Amino acid sequence: MNGATLQLDRITSGYRASVVIRDVSFKVAAGEALALLGKNGMGKTTLLKTIMGYLPKKQGSVQVNDGDITRLSPHRVAHAGIAYAAQEKALFTELSIRDNLRMGLEKDSLFDERFADIETVFPVFNARLKQYAGTLSGGEQKMLLVARALMMRPSIILLDEITEGLQPSVIERIAAALLHERQVHGTTLLIVEQNVPFALKVADRYLVLKQGEIEEQGDANAAGATESIFNHLRV
Image (cartoon, rainbow, N blue to C red; front, side, top):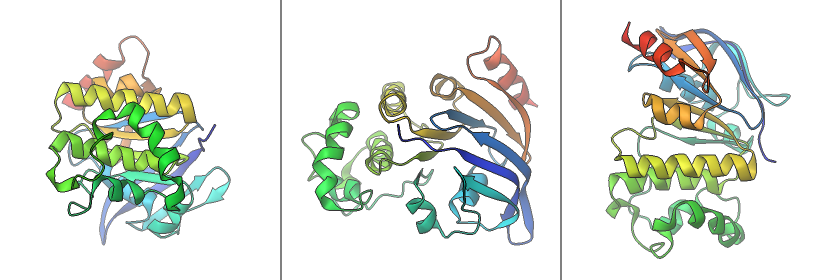
């Protein structure tokens, strides 16, 4: 199994003098899926960018298993086994689907083996590897972002609002792909979402982030979890 433990200890971060995330601590066990929920502007994306090293940590530490990645640059964080499917569609639109998927590989010789797993969960790409990524629909582009992350066979995947603007059938396909990834490879997931039903379907636990701080947490499968989350999101 492939998953790794992700631990944040008292992380504070933001943009220059502006503090967005305040003293956030949590742990995601190896192979676990944790949903980070909250309304827009609460600091969810900021937290993911902080983990990845795109934003500096003003305070606190980030560890993967027993290794400290707090001060690593983004490419070194990726080499530590963390894949990031960003909210922005960070695809190379003038390259083919195949070339975009190759970006997740350390060597080209791994492509056929890794893609054999991808075509199981995203069959839409099976006969379209030469198609330019920029010609895909919005939903297909989101699936390609997830597929590229899966091609890395990472220990941890960070997903940022991956279901935003998608039709239900595409959301179901992405949920199935993530559940398959956990079952087959034991990958650890940290899922930033506003789509509560999707998040709770994929995750084991949830956190609610409000104004850069953790306000609520619980078991995703517990009775009343959905109602409790929506109560916190309404305030």
